Image (cartoon, rainbow, N blue to C red; front, side, top):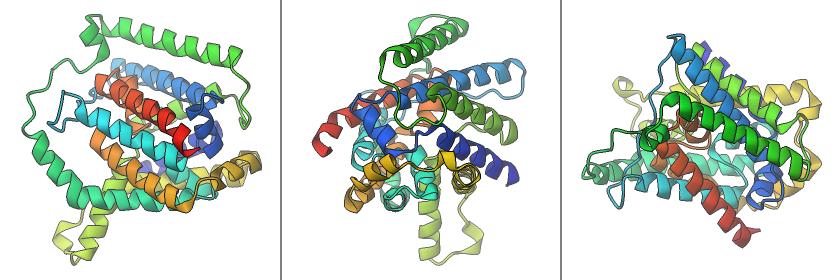
Amino acid sequence: MATTLVSGAAFGAALVAAGVHQPSVILGQLKFEDWHMLQSFLAAAATSSLVVVALDKLNILHPKPRSASRLGLFGPYDGNILGGALQGTGMALAAACPGTVIPQAAVGVPTGLYTLAGAFLGGVAWAGFLGPRLSTCAASAPPENPRLTVHERAGVSRAAGFLAFQATCAAAIYACATYAPPPRLAVIAPALGGLFIGLSQLVSMVSRKAMLGVSGSYEEAGRLFLWLVRGARSDAIPAARNVLFAVGVAAGAWALQAANPAFAVSAAAQVDGMSVSPLLAVAGGVFLAVGARMSGGCTSGHGISGMSMFSTSSFVTIASLFGTGALLNFFFR
């Protein structure tokens, strides 16, 4: 229990330190006007990849690449594509992603609580209706390709994949830092913030033997709610480990802002947050939670953890997520 809270707090504090929870940072990235989020995201994924390889070599933890999320509708990655698209829609609506909703609510972003409420409703809908029905559809899908990673599909070694990934992330971060406009709201360098997020992966893997991921907390919260509504039978209490992790995320985010006012949500971010109506925020939260469960992960579970293991499903999900978010952002802003 304590390790789950601590690892959640480390992640929440890292998100606030990096500044990627601020609505203007998310919207700026979707508009291709502010490259703060991409720099932090790539630095976090690269650092997480280094952590995964190091812990594997030290025989401390051997995480497995993420499998495809299949719905049995079209292709082996239909759940990743559709779930990523739903998450991208939620990002465009609410200026948030599943991993940043909780820090937003904790530190006082105007629409953070509305988005969190929508994510809770999405978790209830998934736990009580959508999840069971889509799992039935997935049962009819053909067997999954055993080559789960990008480097396996490319026919190269894991070491070669690791070096290529690190080089690509470093080149993209350098290009953004050199040629893109400087970030408006960064308290620390975006890449340094991403490094802190990646190090929170180390805390999570060493302390609780699990990788970062937030979206499971919405489904667990939905299961707990339905359990209470149905009579709270003492012999069937749903698991709540991910919910406890989410509580830690909120505590860590709030604690860092309280300890250092420099990390408080800026006036510019407050204005951007207020530009998201409560109705859109709630709707966005629903899309974020449902999409994250449909794709089997979110910007943290797929983007930081899954990509660091070179999981093909994670690259597909993130491409769908940001592509859809950038496209739809033009309609909502």
